Length: 128
Image (cartoon, rainbow, N blue to C red; front, side):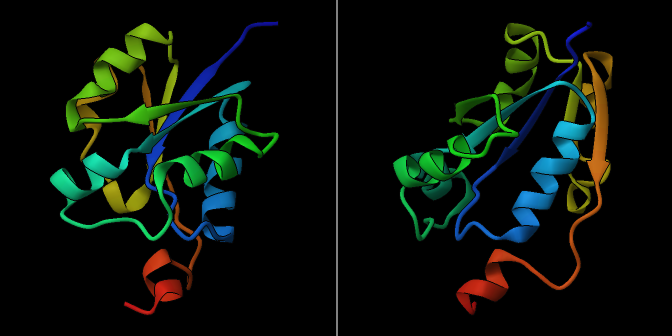
């Protein structure tokens, strides 16, 4: 059987069913799912906000899901090409709120924008 490797990226703060459905859809695109979770430093420096849950806890939650095969740290915006090559990725998957933003990766692998689950977000759950 041919292994089809999928990769996705996110903060996964205040983990909720929207995240779960996204990861489930990402896994369904292949046979192996890698998840890159943004570090606390990356969130503060690059996104200008800190997560409610620290990196170690966010990793623990994602690692506990049986649909997730590997978990890595996201430390910079521009590591994606490097990751795709290093981990022999076939499919890059991300929420469709990023539609078009990662088309530049199409010369390295398939790029799939996954529809978000309606009416749920970390922002809603946190209340800001």
